[in-house]
Amino acid sequence: MTSQTELAALMCSRLCHDMLSPVGALSNGLELLADEQDPEMRARCIELLEQSAKISTDKLKFFRLAFGAAGGFGEAVPVEEAQEVIAALASDAKRVELNWAISESSLPKPAVKVLLNLSQIALDALVRGGTLDIGAERRGGNVEIVARATAERIAFDEAIGNTLQGEVGADDISSRNAAAHMIALLAEEMGGGLQYQITDGALVLGAVLPEPEGMIG
Image 1 (cartoon, rainbow, N blue to C red):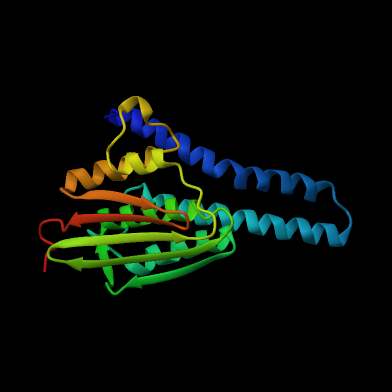
Image 2: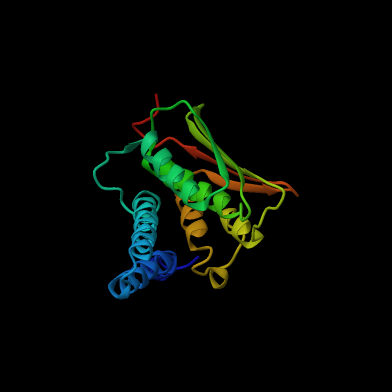
């Protein structure tokens, strides 16, 4: 098990890695815009800047809910907040069909963190597009979550799956699987668990999380 400071450092590395590309594109676009005189090219530069700004904003909104304290919410987060974040990331990824099966209006904050991270892992597996199905429900005092990616090609590092299931040592935790490690620890603290299954055309990620005390019923 990694220490809290090591995990924080790995998560910071992950955030910096994910933000480097869109923020770098913003910087490059501004440099091009400053030197460009052709109206059509300037319009194209502005379009690219708007795209990079949207991707940056979408990622920051995801990080806030998936990794941060999600200030401004109570113990439960409206499901529509999570849906908007994932829909934006799926839109940025292109060629991804997104389906939801969540009847709840809100979910406990830890469950939303797990849902968002599992959804991101599943989305990352759709390197050439595909379908992302996300579901969650309360049942028997638990919150059950599933994220399923289906496509002709699934790109998935099973080390991340093993991390979700707590089957890796501290030396195997890196910025690549730090988020998986974080939600595995979160699930363990709640008395729940995570699991995954992969076939040729599908990746299924699941979680069963006991409801926090005071929120059952």
